[in-house]
Image 1 (tube, rainbow, N blue to C red):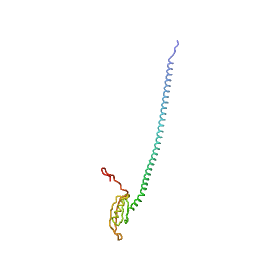
Image 2: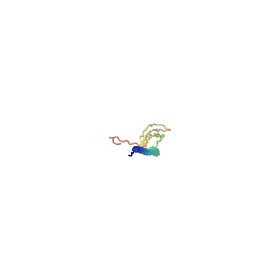
Image 3: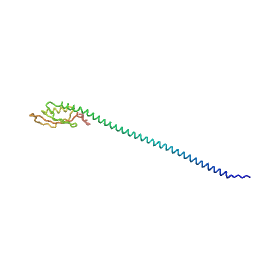
Image 4: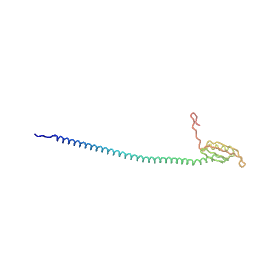
Length: 192
């Protein structure tokens, strides 16, 4: 009878099975390392892309801040120009004001009245002069009141003095410049 030793076949099969399992384990580990490396590489690429996007956004923010600064400077310059134009407008309006005012004053002065003092302070005017009579001073004050350049005319001083042997009246008066403002009627009052 022939005897067959099957133990060697079993050991050989076990060794081959162990080799196959070891090979499968190594392939599994290699595949896992490759997959993990791929995921790592993908995440690093995404992080770098995000950092690049953040850097671009920060650069754009800096550029926009610079543009905003320029716009603010332009707005300040515009405000300065507007103020200067307003001052020029006021100067142009004020340029003809004194001429009109002096013309109205000249028209208001009656014969035999001489002005010796003229002083403006903001919207107040102080006038001094000499007249032959008090009636001439009163006429002068009425003429100023009827003018559109003066209002609230008040006589401060009227005194007699001797000028080269002639008795005359020296006077000082004040008034407000510009047309009188109409006051708003209070509720329940008829307009004046």
